[in-house]
Structure formats: structure tokens, C-alpha cells
Image 1 (cartoon, rainbow, N blue to C red):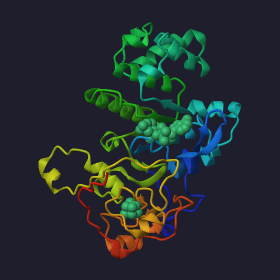
Image 2: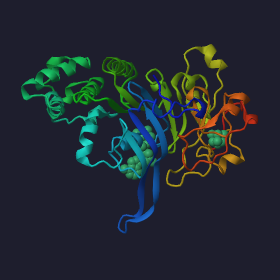
Image 3: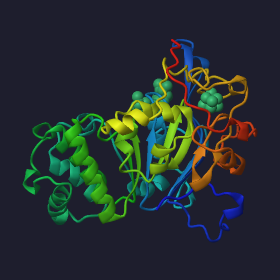
Length: 382
Ligand SMILES: Nc1ncnc2c1ncn2[C@@H]1O[C@H](COP(=O)(O)OP(=O)(O)OP(=O)(O)O)[C@@H](O)[C@H]1O
Ligand code: SF4
Ligand SMILES: [Mg+2]
């Protein structure tokens, strides 16, 4: 089901054979200006919220996007939906460049590309009944007035809610039920892609699983594609075909989901995985853990070289001077690291530079002698 972000040159299908991805993001940058003085509006630089991200999404695929708070996950999907201005790069939907599309041209695309937000309480208008919340997008989608109520009932049933609760207000539902209403609202316009911004983070763990199962069922039933943003790798594990790990606006690793959990190549991913408890004590004991300390540096002046070098237990001299390119290993597994973990010398030798690499990255690929760098134990930096 997963699409490769880029292919090895030797195995790349010709452009004519390759199906057009549903979504293609190329070298996307989203910088926010920061002013030093509100009165003078003097520019003091930019927040590099999304800094040269390239990825694709196929029909029916789920791409998980994870990383610490502030790494640019929400900005990335807001940029895709054109809810924030794009600084450079392109966003293509069904092959069409929508990066600079005008509002009128964007309207049909926006219907096919819906968003579900983290906080269902905040994203639903508290003064509107469910029939109004669902009726507005249904009417926009061309459902005749006389059929709106029936369709709204169908939507409620589809997301596992009582169809007779159409006249209730959001506060009359639980958190999980409100998120189901948010999902029903997204479904009202028959989308192909749903951008999910931490859709379960505000919910209790038991409710999280129910909402994730619902999203899974809807995907099977309706052939939807998802970009699923989460803080935590454990949340996206079972729903994602592939997972992108972001740090300070950049993609550090992008891999088929199971492969990422079994064989993280980037030390940052290994550290994120190390933070997840494993129920099986035997597996837990045999696992190599990497723990990182401290906070990410400022996105206004991100570190040169590898952005992770100020916190990385494996950092060496090259890491603070040369930005590693995204290297493509077997199975379309991409990672940007000079000292890749869990790969053999042969796998490093066979790796190729990926077209998804940031334009600012150096061309120096990791060397076979860096194979299998053992994960260090806790680096207590700060
Ligand atoms: N409108 C804005 N103006 C200025 N800076 C912004 C704006 N929106 C986001 N940022 C900054 O961009 C960076 C990325 O923010 P973003 O919200 O995308 O991160 P995130 O990964 O979604 O974090 P979280 O997990 O906390 O939701 C942060 O440094 C944030 O402060
Ligand atoms: S390039 Fe260097 S600093 Fe960056 S993740 Fe790899 S080892 Fe760590
Ligand atoms: Mg966010």
C-alpha cells in the first residue's frame, strides 16, 4: 500500500508508469517572521517551522508524522491545506500544483482535503446543534435541503453515534463523542484525504483506541487517505503505513511503519522509541535504549550541520558542520544521519542519496565504517 518517497535510480519506474500520488509535497518551507519590536515591526528573523520537507502520499495510505512539540507537525499539515502561507516549495494534490491556487480554485480541493483537530471542544461551535454543524458542509456539498437531515443521521450512525442526537449541542457529548462529530463533519463533504492533527491526544487512553479503530474502519470502507500527526510513536504504530519523524522543521527519518519500530536508523527515532514502554519484559530487557536530554534548540536559529547534533549521543565532528542528506536504504527506508544505527556496512554501501533530501543538505553519504554504531546510554547534557 505504501508509496516510496523516492526510488533507487536502478529500480525507479519510468515517470509514465508511476501512478500520480494523491499528495506530493516538494521542498516545502514555511517560515514565520518574528519581529523584535511590535511598534517598529522590525524583523528579527524567522521561525523555521517547516524547513524543506519532501514527501508523498498514495490513495488509501496513512502517513504518520511524529516528533516533539514545536517540530512543525501542525504547520506542515496546515501548509498542505493552505491554511498558512507557504514560503517556498510546492504542494500537489492529484498532480495539480495548489501552492499558489486562488481561493476560488482552492475551494473544491479543500472539500477533498479535510482536517480534524486535536481539541474537539474547541473545534466545534458550542452554540450550534449537531444538525447545524453537519448540515452546513452537507448543504455546501450540494445535498438538497430536504435530504440534509437524513444524511446527517447517516453520518452520525457511520461514526458510531446515535442518529437521534441531531438536536444536541457539543457540550452534551463526551470528549470521544465530540471527536466523532468532528470526524463526521469532515466526512460530510466526501473527502479523499483527511489531515488529522493529534486527533486522539486530548482523549483518555481507552477512548483513543476506539477513535483510532473508527478511523481505521472508515479508511477501509471509504478508501480514505490520512496524514496522522501525533506526539508519540505508540499512537501511530498500528494505523500508519509509513511514518515520518520530524525534528526542528526537517524530516529525520521516513520509513515503512513496522521497519521503523524494528530497525530505527536515526538516533532521534531510537530515542523516541526508547521512551515507549514495551509490555513484554523480555523484549524490554533486550531492547537497546537511547535517551536524550534537554529541549530542542530555537527554530529561529537552528543549529548548522545536523539539527540534532546538540542533543545527539552519537554526534561527531562532521555532525556540527555538514547537514546529512536523506539516504535511502532498503525498502524505501530514508534516514538523515552520518552515523546510522541498525544497518550493516553492506546496507550503508548500498544506500543512495534520496531525492527527498533537503536542498541545503551536503552530498556526503554515511560511510560503511560507521556501521552499527551502538546506541549510547543516557547523555545527561542539560
Ligand atoms: N502562526 C505562527 N507564527 C509564528 N510562529 C509559529 C506560528 N505557528 C507555529 N509557529 C512556530 O512554528 C514552530 C512549529 O510549530 P507547530 O505548531 O507546527 O509544531 P507542532 O510540532 O505541531 O507542535 P505541537 O506538538 O506542540 O502541536 C514552533 O516553533 C511554533 O512556535
Ligand atoms: S548526523 Fe550526527 S548528530 Fe545527527 S543524528 Fe546522526 S549521529 Fe546524531
Ligand atoms: Mg501541533
